Length: 142
Image (cartoon, rainbow, N blue to C red; front, side):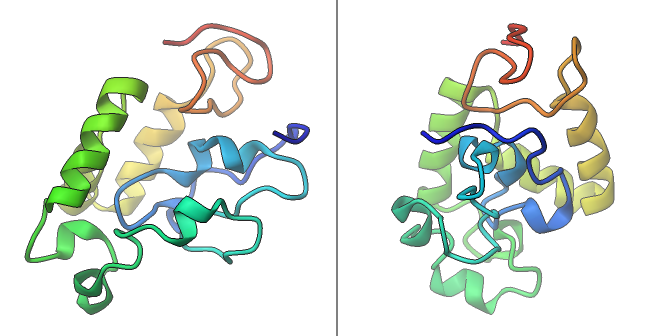
């Protein structure tokens, strides 16, 4: 992986993927100039698995009003359930819970909660969901 940035793209609505992933917390967001701009951003510098993602490219999602999986007739589908299980197990994050929170309380409320939830208690910077320690100060958060 490349050198880490000092300021990743902050937590905002454009960084919430259709599956409910907060792309601001993804390791790819913490890279130097070749950092990923999130699922909704350009495919430039995006990992291949994100470009080819079956959820991002889902035919049902394309028909939805919000372009978020909770707005789909198949929510939660098998693809999303598999992703959710992996993230709950490995990273203490549930995409399905994120989407339900957005659906029930709105994106602004969700973003406010995420900013507090994923802030390092020692240095105050954004945590990376894929690391057990803060990338900036080394504080263990999991």
